[in-house]
Each structure stands twice: as structure tokens, then as C-alpha cells.
Image (cartoon, rainbow, N blue to C red; front, side):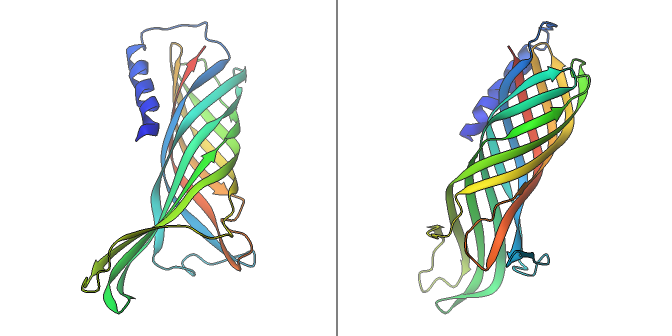
Length: 234
């Protein structure tokens, strides 16, 4: 994935330069971030949360990816401000559903719902003793974002005498909410090697905004996964 090239290149630089121990690192760190997660929806009817599985019993979390640029500014040895820009893709799966009928054809069908965002995470980080080789990290962020694409992918298997084929359909809903606002929580460890810092952060994200406007049944995204960050101190 193109978005992972910068992160992979950064990891190689990290490995090459681990011998370059430098105690004069500045407060500002800039680097790359990449994560993999599971994402799904919570459904609401007239702003009331539905029971899990009440909407689509066959729906399950899908694998999502994100990557981008991250920066951190140390206020002191224990606290930092973080920010950046990130590409995020959520994928939610429904099915496979047995004996699903399309134009009289019996088979199985699976739907995958894709949503892509540009996100701007803005966070506050607690990192005690971050000057040590290994240290603890806890980060909370508010992330405004914008939906740059949404589409549905259909995979069908069964009697093909009617010419049914797999399809990819772009969302044409005029109710799509293009703007998002997520709460994000990270906790994990950081490791220093000279001017480089590698962070390993399990994370969870939840969207405050609904995915669509003016609809009786609505949904909000949530996700959980692992975030890897490589930063360089200038």
C-alpha cells in the first residue's frame, strides 16, 4: 500500500541508525504512522442505541487501514501535544448470507461497505520518562475528518444463468454526512534510539457524528486496533 511506503522506509532508517545515540534531541518530533484495525457500526433508531445484532445479525467487523504523518511537541519530560494528517479506510462486512435471491437466482451474497476519510488527529499525550530507552505512553485525541469516498462491494456466488456478476456500487445517498468527529484513545510503549522514537500503541476510536443525516435508522463507526509510529527528533 502506497501509504505504508513512508512508514516502511522510516523503519529501515530506524534500524540503520540505532547506533547513533544522541542526547541533544529537540522537543519537536515528526514522523509517520500506520495502523490496522477492526471497524464496525453502532446502530441508532431516533437516537436510541439498538441492541447488538438487532439490525443485521450477519454483519461483522472488517479490517481497516490508516496511515499518515504525525508530529509531537514535548511540553516537558512527561507531557506532549500531538497532531497530524491521516488517511483512514473503514471496511464493514455483511454476510455471506445463504439462499439470498437476486432476480430469482439462489446463492450466497456478501456485502462490504467501504468508507474513506482524511483525518486530522489532535491529541494530548502522557509519556513519563520519555527520555529513557523504553517508556509508557497514554494518548487521548479528538479527530475531525472528512469523507472522501463511500461505496458498497457485492460478492455473489450461485446459479449464474441470469448473468449475475460481482458488483461495486458507489454511494449516491444525498443524506451522507461528509464530516466526522472521532474520539481516540491510545496506550502502549515507546522506545528511543538516538534521535528516533518507535511507538507501539493499541488504540480505540469512536465517531460522535452519524454516518448519514435525517434518517430514522442511523449508524456510528467504532474501531479498535494497533497503531505503529516512527518519529524523528529535529
